[in-house]
Amino acid sequence: MSSTDPSDAAPQPRRKMSNTKLALICSGVFVGMVGLAFASVPLYDAFCRVTGFDGTVSRAEAAPTRVLDKTLNIRFDTNVRDLPWTFRSEQVAQKVKIGETGLAFFDVTNNGDAPITGRAVYNVVPESAGPYFRKLECFCFSDQTIAPGETIKFPMVYFVDPEYAEDFETKNKPEITLSYTFFPADEDAQPQQSAKAPAAPGASTLGGS
Image (tube, rainbow, N blue to C red; front, side):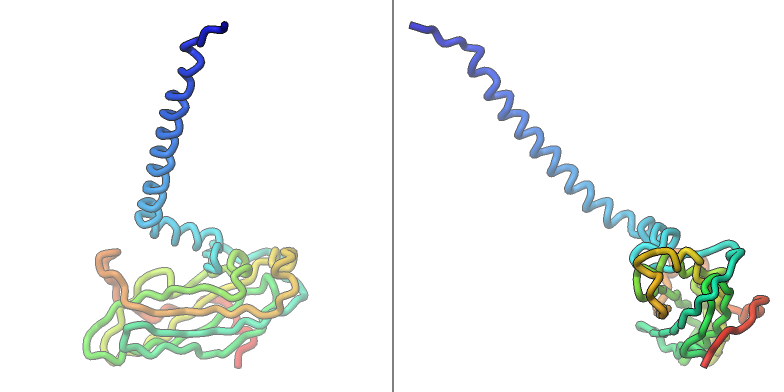
């Protein structure tokens, strides 16, 4: 007749305690991730702008040193949300070679009766082109305050990185659409600065319509 060893039942409470602890840890991680997602929206936006993730255009400090003998059609789309503004692109589309610097102009008019500060957000289609569509100069890098009845012409200098032609997701796509949307700026985000028409950068206008 065999006797029961009390130690045989000991692991069960420990396993139960371990499972409970694991459940609590998982719940805590989930809650923490949700909180972090809401708290890190500015970080996510900054990440997208740097990497081009989610179709977000990235900023560049210098133009590429090589230009490929491959032309892309760049289309421009403009929108306004909750602002008494008129926002339009002076060109419907432009033809640029990959690696070549392009220059586009946009006109913004404040149809309201008071100065208003707006902010332009942007992305590209297809989303896979985001990391390769780079801007050297853009009104979207800062908030813009426009006086009532005032119209301002903004230049935008850009290029498509030569690596666009090497990525299997983009190399066979002949067209990119750059889309802008102006919406009211968060006044608490940064000090307002009156918009001034920037001097046109030293880049030649390419294509156009």
